Image 1 (tube, rainbow, N blue to C red):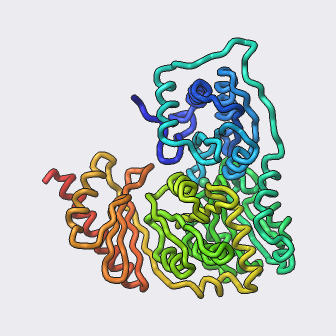
Image 2: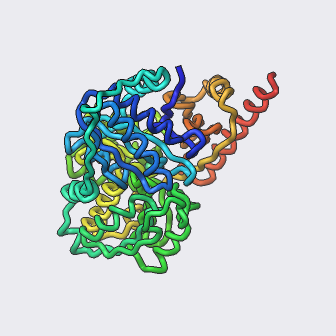
Image 3: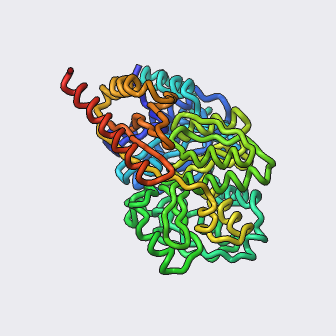
Amino acid sequence: MGKLFGTNGIRGVVNESMTSDLALKIGLALGSTFQNGKILVGCDGRTSSQMLKSALISGLLSCGISVTDAGLAPTPAIQYAIKSLDFGGGVIITASHNPPEFNGIKVIDRDGVEVTPDIEKQIEKIYFTNNFKYVKWDNVGEYTVNNNINSFYLNGIIKHVNKNLIKKSSIKVILDPANGVGSLTTPFLLRKLGCKVVTINSHIDGFFPGRKPEPNEENLQTLKEAVVTSGSDIGIAHDGDADRVIFIDEKGEFHWGDISFALLIRKVLSEHDGGTVVTPIASSKLIEDVTTEMGGDLIITKVGSVTVARKLKEVNGLIGGEENGGIFYAPHQYVRDGAMGAALLIELISETEKTLSELIKELPKYYQVKKKIECPENIKNQVLLELKEQLKEYKINDLDGVKIWKGSGWLLIRPSGTEPLLRCYSEAPTKEEAEKISEWGLKMINSVLTRIKNGS
Ligand code: MG
C-alpha cells in the first residue's frame, strides 16, 4: 500500500507531486470514510491554496459531505473553529514554513488536533484502491461559507488574557507575519489588546517576497533591526501559517522558542498552581529547570507538533512548547498557536513591568549548537544504530534518534522526518562546551557515515 501522509500531513511541490487531482482524490477518500457531519476547510495564502482547496471540497461534496469554507485563515484559527463550533473535522491547505513552491494537506479531527495515523491509513487505503462512495445527485453535500472564523478565533484568545492590564502598559510591538495568513489575525489581535502595532511583511503574498516563511534567525534580520530602529518593546514573527511564534527582545536579540516557552511555563504554572508541561526531546534543559522550579511535571515526547498536541490532551497537561516556536496552551486549545503564544507573552510583560531582555536574563543560561549533516534516506537507520552502539557507555535516551549526556551538557542526533538529513544538536552551560560537544558529535557522525557509504 502506498503512503501519502508524512509527519505533518501531505506535502509536495505544486503541480509536481501536489496536484489538484491529488487534492480531489483526497477529498473523495476522506468523504468516503468520514461519518461525523460537517467539515470545515480553510487554507493559507500560497499561490496554489485556492486551487487545491476547491478540488478537495469538490471531492468531499461528491461523497455527500457538507462543507463550510473558512477561506484564508491561520492553521490554529481553523483548528480552534473545528473544536469550538462542533464540526466533525476539517482540512487545512498549507505548507506551513516550506518554500513557496510547496503546498500541503492536513486532515484535522473534531478535537482540533491532526488525525491519528490510523485514520490516515484508512484514507490512504481508499485513495489507492479508488474505492470512493459517490452519492446520488440529490444527496450531494451542501457548500457554505463562513467569513467569521478569524474574528471568532481572536475572541477566543482574548478570553485568556487580561485585556485591561495589557492596555495600560501600551506595549510597542513590531510584527512580521512573513506575508502569510498571520497577517489576517495577529495585527488585529494586538491592537485589540491595546498594543501599539507596527507591521512588516503583513499583506498576503504567496511568493513570500519579504522573507522566507521559516522564522529562524537568518530570516529575521530585518525584524531584528526594525525592533531597534523603531524603538519597539518586542518583535514578533510567525511562520507561513502562524502556528509558530518567535520573539525578538527590545535590544534586537533573537531568541529560540525554548526561551519564550520557559517564560510562559513560569507564568502559567504559577497562575494554575503547578501543572503538566509537555515538550519534545530536542528542547533545552531550561524547560526541565523551570518546570521543576515551579513544581510542575514534565513529559518528554518525540519531536513533532502532532505528538506534543496528542500527549498534552492525553495527560490533561497545561502547556506544551517546542524550540522552533510552537506554544500549545491547553486552556485555549491543544495545538500550537502563534497568536495565543504572543498574547500570553505580551501579558507577561505587562504583569511584570519588565522588558523582555530583563525577563530572559532571569532564566538559567544554556548555549545550543544546531547543525545538520546530509545523510541518504536508506542508511539513516543504520547510521543511528551504529551511533547508539558507539555511545552506549553514556546515559542514553533513544526515544527519537540518540540523546546522550556528556559532562554538563547533552548531544542529540536525530533523523529529519522530511529531508535526507541528520540533525545534530548540542547544549551546555557554556558556549565552549556546547561547541566542543557539537564538534565531537559531528566527527562521530561523519566517520560512521563514511564507513557505511564505503560498505566497510
Ligand atoms: Mg506552521
